[in-house]
Amino acid sequence: MNRTFRIAFSLKNTYRVNTILYSLKQIPLIRRILPQKLYCDPDLKIFANIVSGIWEFVKAFLGKFLYFLLMITAEVLFFSSLDRAGLTGEYASREIFLHIFVLLTLVGAWLNTYIFNPTKDKYYALILLRMDAREYALVTYGYEMLKILAGYLIFGLIFGHICGLFPWQCILLPFSAAGIKLTVVAWSLRDYERTGIAVSENQVDVKGWVLIALALAAAYGLPFLGWILPEMVSVCLLACGIVCGSLSLCKVLVFREYREVYQQILTQYLSQVEEVKGTAKRQSEKMIQIDGTGSSNRTGFEYLNEIFIRRHQKILWKSSKRIALISLGIVCVVILGIHFMPEYKPVVNHVVLTNLPYFAFIMYFVNRGAGFTNVLFMNCDHSLLTYSFYKQPESILRLFQIRLREIMKVNLLPAAVIGGGLALLLYQSGGTEEPLNYVMLMVSILCISMFFSVHYLTIYYLLQPYNAGTEIRSGTYRVVVTGTYFVCYGLMRLKMPAIAFGLGTVVFCAAYCVTACVLVYRLAPKTFRLRA
Image (cartoon, rainbow, N blue to C red; front, side, top):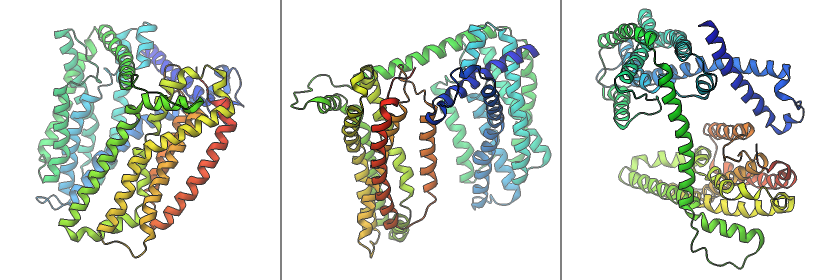
């Protein structure tokens, strides 16, 4: 068992270390100082192993911390503050905590079995290295259960104490969660013996999703209505989970057909990955309009772009039009709402005038930049990047400008609807003494849309994240996109007048556009290439 654990953990850690080293190699400023024999450098491997260890620790505890904080405790404090059927006080907080925990644990037991989760490290260990499947399953599953026991015990005691649970109730939490998970696993193993069909945790059928939806609705909906499980019932269910888990442990330990189970699950996993890729490609091809492209009097890159836009019009414009219609519908609903409930007009007026930075986060999700660049690579650049003329500085800058014009058109449609809708909401909710506010509402949203258009196309040219299989392989690209998300998220907390924010977006957008063109012209000939 110890040897199996060392090999399994070493294999998983090696895969993670190599991923870290590969990601470091993709960072433009760092890869120049890295040695050519990157994967053989002992110092870098020590660094990568430290990062891997930190990540393993964070993965073991951070998720459970956020689970108790956001999924349970925050809701308990919220529901306890409501005056619904007497749900106030420490006793009610304890009941709500146990109510939510029991139902979420049932959902998590079905969605996160761990033992039936197909992963690459399991494929390497069991299919390529032919490790003993039973030992591997028990060792890795036991490791996951230990992490659950440790994480749930620590944060169960902390957040349980905040919500008024007794210490003995907090101690029940980790063992009941592990017991319920063991019960689900044992039931799945018995089902395999009966049917010969192994089902991974990623293959939840319609009936399963309905039950999960009902459990989530009961977890959060019932306390909102003032109905919760009595404390004694919740405690009894937790105790039953421990008892059932203890009985199920025997089944997990004596089961002998783990190799057959994993062969089915991993084979299905690999076939599903290939099927998803093929389906995405087929769907993309169906959306391409090959016929009726018509003639064009344009030449060069303008002609290439016009043909591309015509053939991919459905892909590029479908989601943009849908978002614009949804935005228009929301604006109409709000206008009708304040018409029939005029007491909310000051609230809407205040929100529009002081919360404009909030819409930077909304526009982050509305923009189609990532989808546009994905279509560009999959159906155009994937082939043309093999030609040297396509990577000349003048050609790159010219095509960058043409594509920027097209992506702005796609993004400006929903942006215009949102900006115009905000101006209309401001007028309908009482207006403003400063007419410039109407202009700034429109201009700021359009500038934010323009920024995202430039931003995604720029990082596409400077980082080119896709490999020949159209998979994202650039760690830097992921970091930039993630950083963009957090910056936009942080802007939601910014409170400033619409005029000030609008002027700021205009200046920033103009400066970013100039900087992007310069960077693309100078750096893209080296960075805009096919990845290995």
